[in-house]
Image (tube, rainbow, N blue to C red; front, top):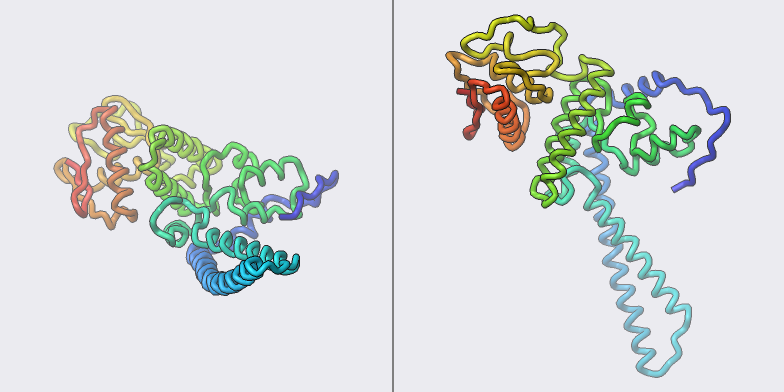
Length: 335
């Protein structure tokens, strides 16, 4: 990789809104991103096939050369330095081929350690508006553009040069990924992606420590997004609930959901937007204190649904909420 250019005393002027405009043009739709990432993965598969063929050919060449050297040794003949150098050259090339195949077959993507070799494609399909920090592409995007000390810091933090987040927000950001554009859809994809990323690590021995860090980072960064624009965060509403509203006999949206993201019954508890949205949906479907919501209405995987229901139940206990959630094979049940 090219060396970092020297910091110039008079860097070229590049307004941040121009970078944002270029980014929105590039990422004009999730489908464009999906096609781009899928095309990259297909190119990787093609390269793997080519490299595998080259590796097989190198095996034959190296085996023949080693056999020749051993035969010469057994016959007491002098082995030429050229032959040894050629053999070493082939071995070095083989090592590079192995390393490249390993890099292509095991890309650094969320869900590392998964049995799915195509986990990067899975995340590209589900979260096309999410960018991961510290990717090679993010680092390379800064080539020739590091003009200030702050530029170097943002690059070293893993953000792409065209990151949509303002520099001050980038410096405070904690999560390993961020929304690729500043839209509510991208923020919701980022939140879902972080949940899936956490799910992929729940079997790790250190999960109990990681879980707290993950939750704190997600809450911290969600607040940063809310400070940028409250409309970016799904579930954040502008009208405020009347603090003096009497508590009804049964939970209602009007009483229980306190904006921006608190749940009220016997006291209040602040929750994440994903929990706020789920309870909002449940309360909107309540009939005689019960509701059944099909999984397909929630637009997420079954495992994520079950995790979210479990998390929300723990939060509801803090305010002695009179409704409990559970899941069956295809529904979220409130009763």
